[in-house]
Length: 491
Image (cartoon, rainbow, N blue to C red; front, top):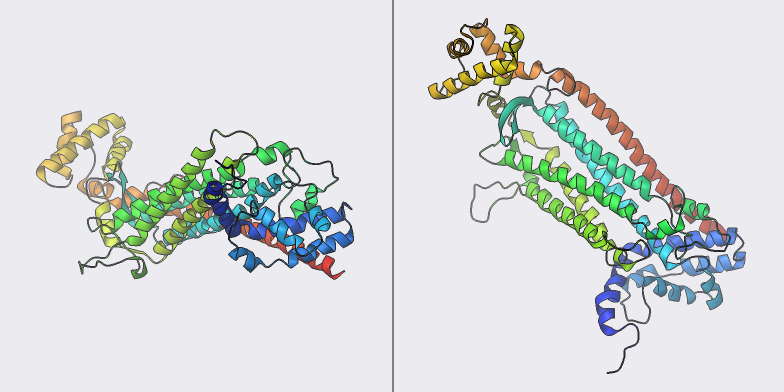
């Protein structure tokens, strides 16, 4: 059997061809940006001449990116890096083209372009998470007095308000936003100049390249720059945490939309009918949020599974085949979060139904027990026993807890009645009273949810500033690099 030369047909079909397509999709512009920044730095450090700089810049500017995007893998080159080197050589002499690769490796190029692409996707996801939180906060602002039943173990538990409920979701999202911010900040450091893994003997300026590519600074240890993968595992960890929250929130609103609950109405643009059942109004957007989010979460777990026991060094396991899965996970996470914000933005709630249920199923009796403790100077255990007997008697009588039932229970437990009138009992058992007396930090009272909303609005402003600063920082880096290239070409 004749031994095949590289690349073998099966290797070409199952590895190199796919990786070439992925690289064109994700990394073509990042490759060009890295080349521009690197060659400018080489000239500034007098590692290449000004004439060589100008020739290389012209060659890079002459690349037909549209044609490159249409190129098919034919096995005459190994990957997009070598394909681009070949195309550059067509536009300047071979020796000059070869100097572009002075003091760098595919290793440090790869981990740089991965960050260049991923950091923009993280900002997109961050924007969508901020938009969803704003929807929650805007809805909360309208519903400080809107009574709802809160559930524990999927059973009616205690009265709350829609504002208190939505602020809980917003608070969760706030922590997700902070995690994404930290992931962005830790990612936005430039590995270029690390070489294969030990830097280079050339007097390069890593700080300059980082500046031109819109990074805060270079990464530090060159070994870690090549070997570390936490720039994407931290991102995916933050994304996974966000997706768990999104899945839980989506499930809540899906339950609300069931006819058996029937307390939310989604906008017409986010529901579908049935091909056979004319009455159907299916909350498909919420289903897609759950499905897309679950898909994204599965992809994050797939990435972790793929790399958790790989060597600390340059290794293909974390490169060409894995990177698209990372981007797909973040992209799908963004789809789910953005869809969620759009779905809820114009949703309305059935307030009377919610209010009615906030007073049903004896869910206000915790406050009755608390009131007995305060008024009678009893232990909560004894008050709990009195109220428990009252509830059981009410269920047997198919009634509410009446004044007579309460006093009968008190006599059974205490041997005497308690000092509570019928009017006081009714006030104590009202869902409005239940909510309004919970004025402590984090509670349900409208005064407290208004304070909490104000705090969340402050967080919103701080996070908007972060997003604007980082977006402007990346834009400024790109503009600076482009202006510098044009300046050198014109000189």
